[in-house]
Image (cartoon, rainbow, N blue to C red):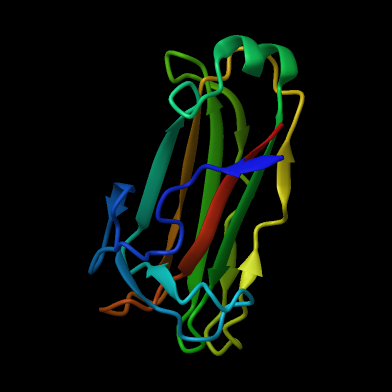
Amino acid sequence: KNKKRNKNKSGENKLKGWKIVQNGGDCWVAEENRKPFPDETVTKCFVTSYGLCLKQQLIDLKKEGYNEAFMDQLQPHIKISDWYAPRFDCGCQYEISVELLDRMKKPICTFQPEKVFFQQWNDEPWCEVSRITLTDYGPGVQFIRFTHGGVDTQYWAGWYGIRVTNSSVEIYI
């Protein structure tokens, strides 16, 4: 059994539920997908600009119904998923960081792969962050901080940067 924990994962409610960490260039915006998404029910995405754009959600596991003893003893698998795509006509960069935090919000475990770069004149592929599952992370996890975003690499005004959508954090019990 699993439960999804991200709110507003695809921009249906603009930027509601997300904390804006960096809002560079012409800022974050939510818009319709330029190309169909593999799941046809996902029609919107978040789009970055020519200055770094990062946004995050902090998931309080206790508020979501997972108490300390449960997290410490069972250490359920935590699955991370995120989708991203470039525009065909502008180079861009994507990044993600997922941190498992203790009660003081200090990192216990961090997943932060290398940044992904797309060249100009690509075919706008939708890409999924490899279905990452965090396991054996040890006791003390009480929060999950999910941060992602990027930038266009050609410094074009407007929203030519990476597009992100269908973000999720799932707890498997």
